[in-house]
Amino acid sequence: METSWSSSDTQSSLNACFLAKRNFQVDLYEAREDIRVAKSAHGRSINLALSYRGRQALKAIGLEDQIVSQGVPLRGRMIHSLSGKKSALPYGTKYQYILSISRENLNKSLLNAVEKYPNVKAHFGHRLLKCNPEEGVITVLGADKVPKDVTCNLIVGCDGAYSTVRNHLMKKPRFDYSQHYIPHGYMELTISPKNGDVSSFPFHCPPPQDCRSVILCNDKSFTCTLFMPFEEFEKLLTSNDVLDFFQKYFPDFIPLIGKQTLVRDFFLLPPQTMISVKCSAFHFKSHCVLMGDAAHAIVPFFGQGMNAGFEDCLVFDELMDKFNNNLSMCLPEFSRVRIPDAHAISDLSIYNYMEMRAHVNFRWFIIQKNIERFLHAIMPSTFIPLYTMVTFSRVRYHEAVLHWHWQKKVIKRGLFVFGSLTAIGTTYLLVHYGMGHISLQTPWSH
Image (cartoon, rainbow, N blue to C red; front, side, top):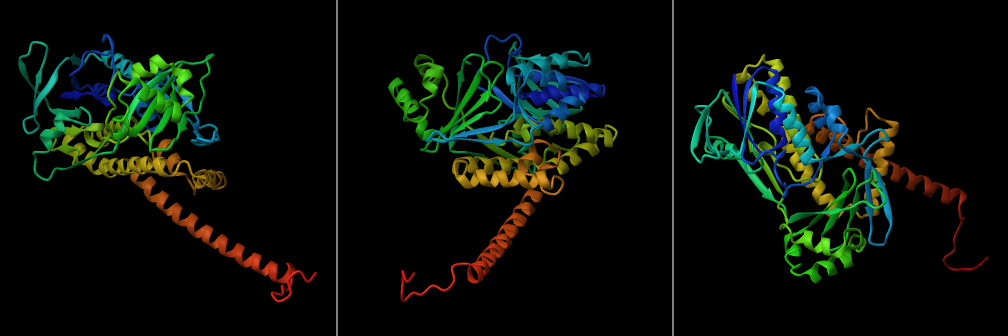
């Protein structure tokens, strides 16, 4: 069976490995040049967050240990207030952590793995022009600038949030699609290490004016991602504007990055957009399927974009096992299974974006997270924090949301009952054993 990919995501290489193991003949088409020989790669996030779902997919093709060895463990986040107070919030138990992974290194490792399969051929510098899912035909344009038609049994669109494959599926009846840009953009800056100091806690620095910096560890450096409304970016027009802004809101960054480097990197690229995409279905008959960002691009505030895409590959492989490689049965089931989960993690990512904007600085947020950790410690099978279900398990995303809503109701009722009993008990103690009778007529009578 011949399979063709339109590629721009890490999912394409991973999926190629999965299907190559099933003896499919795979052609992988990538619009960009081979990242392993490219002179430079920029414009995309340096860091990716790898957690349990992604690791399970890598494990299935024998790459988990290799990729994990390249990552930096992150065990929680450190919230810095403007007053200088720090609050550490672990992601899970002391044994649970996520990994900060270099996008470039991950792509290179997956491409190296793909090349080991003799039934996979990668075509770099080939842009997808057209897709005919009815006939199983794609049209690509290579370096010779001559359009070429390629016929295959299955077209897999892993071509990102602005998917060409998906655009052609949108012309089909009953295909639903929606997209949403959030008002924030992001920009990345690199901080060189001081004395080799690399913390296992990323930093979240929440200044006013609706902007935020998230710092993640690389192997020997830090990646600072600045999130801010586009209108705030647009106010910073000169070198002095940039330095004044950082001096006011992120004064520690200036000596860490250096004034010249900070200004140079700030104006190197424009702030990037963040888009949330939902669509349904993920397939067309038995000829075409969407995966990764092409099916469900999400904003990066739950760290699940890559992990959800990798889990797509794993779920598809599990369904291929279940249906004995029967695409006419596997593809509809893939849509049925993955759509509610994809929509759930998309909504959760937007929720986390709103939470980080509005609540992460409040004392109640810290208390709430500590309550969740305490309840999970004493009832590990019953009470599971949402982040734990999403990041450290393969509980389906939509089931995690349902369980989370149930837990919130239980906590609210418990707090209400506890508060009521406390008030009743306190009143009883005050009346019977407390201050005694208080005369309003003769104050200071004792």
